[in-house]
Image (cartoon, rainbow, N blue to C red):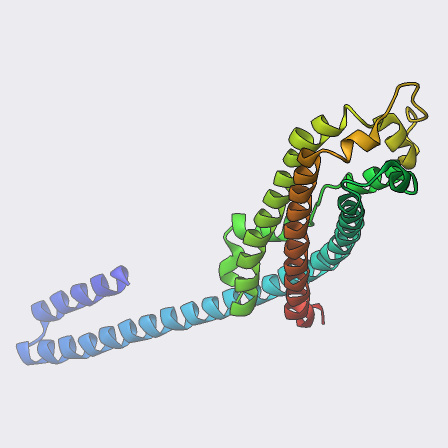
Length: 259
């Protein structure tokens, strides 16, 4: 473009030197129109190039969006299985704790009718909820949330982060309560060695020491601690139900991206 205007300038200079003024003015006007036309063409070319680039960028983003949401769909099918497993374990623990709670203040004969070691084992599940979240982490950490055009999916992703934090926090509180309150109290009266026998642990078996379930079940402190255990279990149960509903919504919202 610079060379072009230089050529115009040199031509005009030469015509001014060799031609008459009227001819020079006419030639200058012609070159000016030509120059303006060239500028318009260049601008149009730039706009077309930008439009093509935007269209291509949008096309690539839609492809990436489909791939991401397809992976998200697969991950939440795994999370659905994980939640179902967790619900089963927590339900078993809560049922066992309800039986233990119902035995508070019972006499020795009633207590002997129950396998208390088994109930304690079921009431203290070894559980750590681990969700598949690599795709969501990738979406959030790399800023790819912007390429998702479905506002419902964006909202569900944001809800998932808050929901899993709540669930993990409640699970942590329950674990701390059991480890800091329940275990220290019952350890003076029950045999963990015999309780662990229900899980076929290699170190488990019959203790040679005295256990005293009767005294334990007469303690108001034990009842109060168990009441709190049940309260936390119920909170986790509600959180798991909400988490499962959210997982089903995400699976449904991303179903079309698997086609």
